[in-house]
Image (tube, rainbow over all chains, first blue to last red; front, side):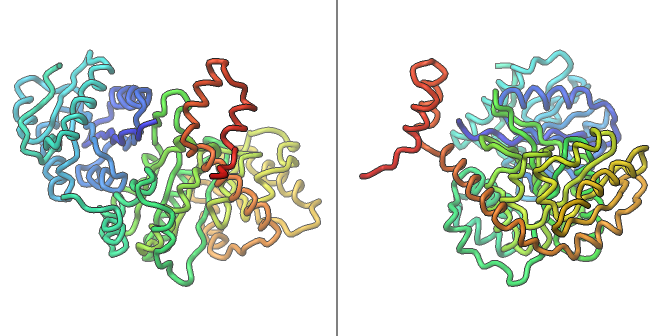
Length: 151
Length: 298
């Protein structure tokens, strides 16, 4: 059996909608990964601490409150400051298309909205992990300009 | 960029948090060996590792949050390893212990790590033992292990923790449950949590009566409520002075040997192949076991 990926699923900011985060956490569990769920209303600082202590390679941020444009880039910035620029960050929730570009520039590698299938998220993780294996810097602080576009 | 496992471990012992997190992973994944861990200098007098165990939902995580708060605010370096089960089907796991612990994500003198049981049986994988050695060598002087929800016959925690706190809660069966043998006999302290609910006092009484007939010294029973805070101070005082119970020494050692044996069996290079053969019906379980336990004469 190969070593499972360690993935943190986090809910940043004042947002109580956790159904999506829980469904994703469950789907990734069923895909054979080790998923650490943070619970609600974590600050970017707390999320970075969790990723650090848990030695997670992936971080999924879920937001349905509209504060993603601040919280996602802030989390990426703090990850890089903490020496965790190699962590692959992806996002989900209600994130309008015009906001996507800015999030990608901040280091977020995929954005999954309502209707995303769990196999798509698995596909993204596989692809990102494969690129990491090829020494491509797809972490939130990496210089790769790749982001998930579906295939 | 490429730092060797040994260098990472050395940096962890020097106090680098990122290196500590990495070292625990390296050890869990078998990239750091037992030899490297046992070579680490361990602090001379060490507070015993406290194992917190009990059935699912009795309040292990919530009570640990209280312990972590108390210890960290009095200046200790507190580490928690919380175990959740790995799916035997997919190999995945949902690790959700830290979401109930508000202190785990902020204080610098608290280190919280969630781990999955992976292939190992029991409520605690033995890999935790080496992880604790790393944490101690890195200066984390108070360590807690939270097991998978467990009860009765599940005593693997005895192979890893030096003191065992068994959690109970009201409404989990009649008095005969308390009479049954198993985990309860290895406990150094019994905590009946959810004292704010009806029946907690009765549950404590039933355990007390069951233990009363024993001719040997029995653990204290304390009622707590993680919600109201009732009994928490008493529990903390009691944990502070838990003595080693020599009566449990051979049971603990036996569990340690069993755990290591399990580990050896699972680490056998042919294990997965033999498993496939047995599932396909080409081999009996007995024949597979014979192959796994064959001693290599070469």
